[in-house]
Length: 85
Image 1 (cartoon, rainbow, N blue to C red):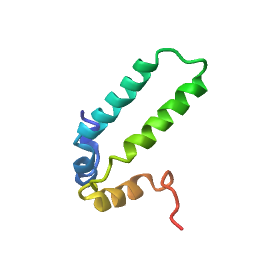
Image 2: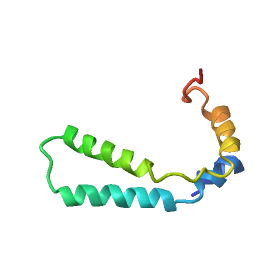
Image 3: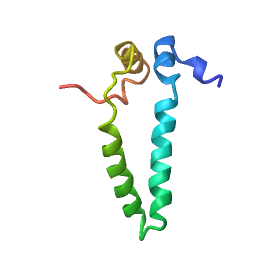
């Protein structure tokens, strides 16, 4: 928990709510549980990729204060952020 407070307030506001993350984790667990067994790791990755694509269709609400958080992410992790063209 202390690591969470190391981030600037703009990032903490965006990361604080975990309902969306928990909902996504639940749906991914449910898909894997319902399928049962897999022939290989690639099959699992394909299924999870498809599930993420379906879940992303439901993400219509914009994240509040995302621009402020994104600016802080660029300051902290600019070398990891993709370049905008």
